[in-house]
Length: 381
Image (cartoon, rainbow, N blue to C red; front, side):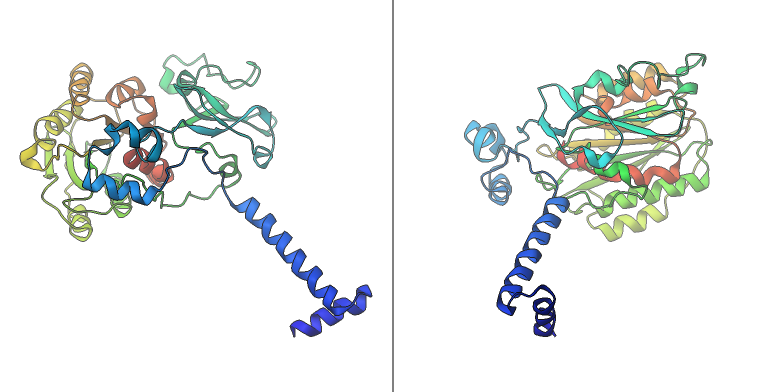
């Protein structure tokens, strides 16, 4: 069949069969090269000498990254010392596929994607490195005429879904990819591989107050299960604990109680829903004083990650912020996931390590959409 196809090409083009074979081979090679160019994401210019070797060395020598010989050259990416690289098209463009320019961000800047939906229905985009203040909604960059908040709203939270410009920020290389703007499907659930192995001590703090409801609470538990599925659970890998809270906070299990994913998922399926008021302050106190302690499995050489999922503001805002500040002394990565419109955004930002550790989703059914970016923060922070 192959040779008859080549013979047909020879008859049509008037060139000999051998040359036709060469031409077909050349065209296939060109097409393959073009496909590879389209499919391959940009590669960071900051790379380890051997990423696998760095991972192996770190197991034998946990303080590897304190040695400048490794952290600044041999294992610079593994040790988290690479500058952030982002897509950069700082003037508005209409087609997301039109931006393929990348840049290295100055210190203190983050990857930003701005998406404008104009009154006539067309879309414009800006992607760039920018100061982190942009993530708070400052300086949208579309000429200053459209896309601002609805100033007529008495409460900032009431108007936050009415603006025409959405701004998203992220802190991993090329995470403001313009290609993702062309799809409405959910991102893939797998965000690895993670260079540090994701051997974190992770405590989930789950709001089960009366405003959440039984159905939403089950969806939140299912989302925790999706996070767990991305991890390798075990005494020397990732450990998890769970606190639920409403009128009171309760530890469902501690970091050193569950050693397999299967057991963890079984426990998730049987967590009870309580109902009540929202005592976030009690939950944060419990995490600091009980969950993240050596007797309950907290490991001194593993990073602590705390993930708070809630649909509303706490009943004691001042004490919640005080407890959050104390929690920051034992965890460098406190993540707030806020669901719905009935929230105090300033409080949730205060709970989190910084604004980049805050995820704002419209409903419990939308939680899946933040999974890839959330996993990057959990495992690469």
